[in-house]
Image 1 (cartoon, helix red, strand yellow):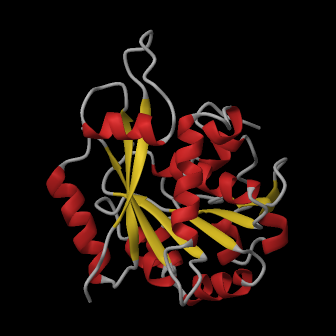
Image 2: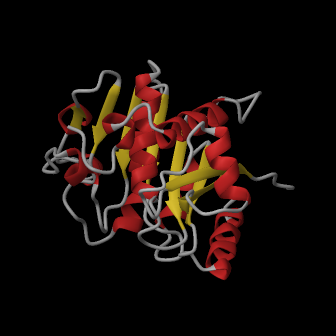
Length: 247
C-alpha cells in the first residue's frame, strides 16, 4: 500500500515521520473547549505538498488508534486514489449525486483504523456540489462515525473549494512549500480563509531543506534527533507553526 510519498508507512522511524506525529499532537491539543475533528488541508498554490500532508497526517492518526476518514475533496485534480492505489469509481461526487451509498464509496485500506472516500467521478460543477445542502448533510451523517476527518482540498488561490469547506470544518491547515511559495500568495490565501471565518490552526512549512545551516536546519535536526547526512545534498522536512488569530 505504501507509495513513495507515504513516509509514515515506508519509514516510520524517520525524522519526517516523527514530525508528522508532532503535527498530530499539536492538532490534538490545539483546542481545549472543542475537539478538532474535521480538518481541511490546503495550500496557496499547486505542488506544495498538501495531499502528502493530508495522507501522512491521516496515517499517523490511524496508527495512534483513532478511527480516521481521509476525504478527497479535490474533485478537479484528485490524486489520493492514485497514491493509495485504490479505485475511484465510487467516491464523494457519486454520493452527493445519489449514485452511490456512503458504505459502497468507503474503502478500508490495509492500515487499521484508516478509511478513505475518494473524489469520485469528475463533476462539471465541483464548487456547487461542495457548497450544497447535500454536502452539509453528508458531513453531518459521517461526523459521529469517525474520530477524525481529514479533508484534502484544492489550493486556495486556484478555486473557492477550500474556502467553502473551511466553513464546515473545525480547523484548517495551510501547507506552504519552502522557497517555492510566493510570499504574497501565502498572505492572500490566509486572507481568503479568514474571510470565511476559517479556524486556521497553523501553517506547515513543507519541503524544508534541513541539510542547510541556519536556524531552521539546526532546529529541525536538533529537535528530531537527526544529523544532516553528508552524503546527501538535500534533506526535506517540515515545521508546523500555530497561528494566533484575533477575531
